[in-house]
Image (cartoon, rainbow, N blue to C red; front, side, top):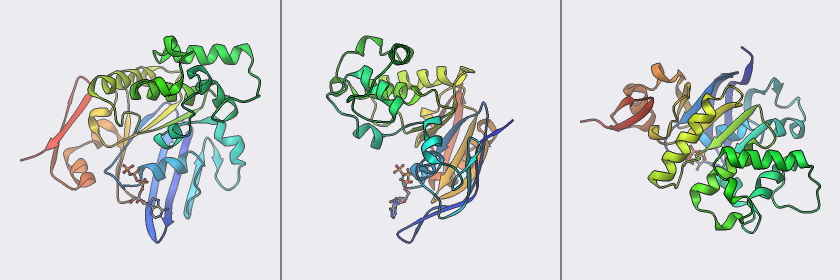
Length: 261
Ligand SMILES: Nc1ncnc2c1ncn2[C@@H]1O[C@H](COP(=O)(O)OP(=O)(O)OP(=O)(O)O)[C@@H](O)[C@H]1O
């Protein structure tokens, strides 16, 4: 199996703080990863490095076979799909939903004078359909609910047919129904063999979709544990990651955690 992502001894220092501290991480073709950890653990920083948006202070990073520092990141970035709250904030509220997806082709937010061919529009519509948003294509982004916006962002992130898809807390801020809907859709994406390699950041084990295969657990910039979900997401590792005694169980492929005792 080829390596999609390879980090060796990656450290990121900002303002005297070690946001990431000696991270080793290897992601291979076909894997679906969860990055789990408490607030401030460094999850977003890790994703920024994986997205080739942030260069580490030390250590080496290879993404899709290209070594950061030796590759033109403007050629690499279109091969990586990315969705985060920070990116969503930049999407114009008055933009048509179809255009929010379409403009990803040019890595821009907000349609202007660029030209799109019919296959681009067809792909945007197909992705909106896949995410259950076909009926919303002509609405403006600002009129959507939070859950609907999240689904549009995932469609947008898939527009360039990326080889790696990075999702930073896609279920944050959703009510129970919208969260379950999104987790189910991410589960469908996970089981599709044509999907890109997936990396999903979350604080909550309840948000791990069925079909995800691996977990990297992060605390204070350090990897607590990383490996296949079934053997890595233990009560011991979870307690160490979140800094309190926790129990964890699995039911029908979904995970539940609570404070023990
Ligand atoms: N430029 C910076 N200078 C100093 N510290 C920073 C800087 N950027 C981020 N941090 C700190 O680095 C830590 C890790 O941040 P990061 O956003 O990666 O964590 P996270 O795990 O994604 O957190 P959350 O779950 O709350 O989103 C935080 O404590 C944050 O305050």
